[in-house]
Length: 109
Image (cartoon, rainbow, N blue to C red; front, side, top):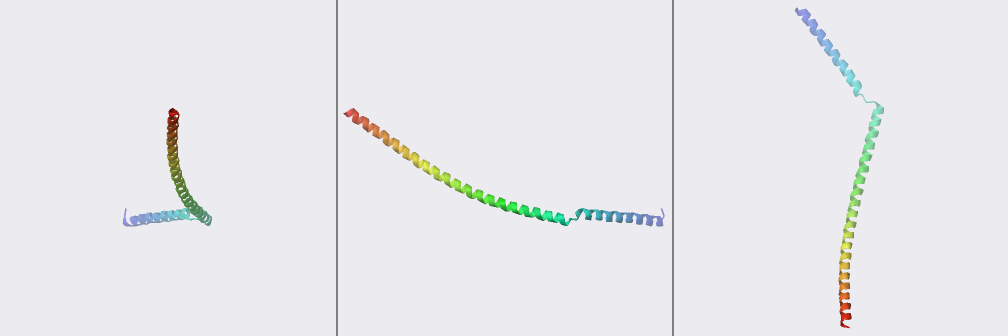
């Protein structure tokens, strides 16, 4: 292969590489192009996502406040139960004392 053939072969190879690169660039540009309808759809999806996140945040705040309220109610109910159990225990003890007193009175009589 002489010098002229080598230059021509190199020029052809470079021209083919340039053409392939240019064609690949066109294909990529067409694939990347976003139409106005697609942008509108993306905007609508972004707005819906934002609204869903706000709704989720509101639900979490409500859930936390409701959980706190229910915890307070449980604590209050448990305190009332303890007080009622103590009252019942005292009443039973008093009833036993009254029965014992009545039995002593009847046995003495």
